[in-house]
Length: 150
Image (cartoon, rainbow, N blue to C red; front, side, top):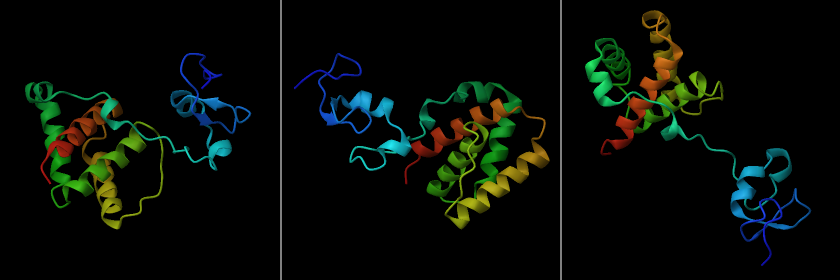
């Protein structure tokens, strides 16, 4: 096999539609993909959000800061009627909006209700809280939820 024509370091193993059908490596395939040109490729996957790599407040930081602890518990209280899976999806949708600035449609009525409820709560009760703080809290909450037994 020949070297990847994009990076010139790894072996090319995938035929690339945007690189003249030449073999490129999987890393370059992922890094150079374009939704409009690569849709028909068998290797194409839409980009995924890496929620686990976003900034967050540690449990220790939250426990030592009264305001953060209050905000966290207030948001968690809004999630108490939802399953863990629904709560994770609600928090991820809020991260899509607050961090990624993406407003995609929500398929689940329960998740849509949760997002609307928390958004309303934030507007009414936490409007003075900076978006960056909310994002860090959302990620901390998501981390807690993902670690919970199902």
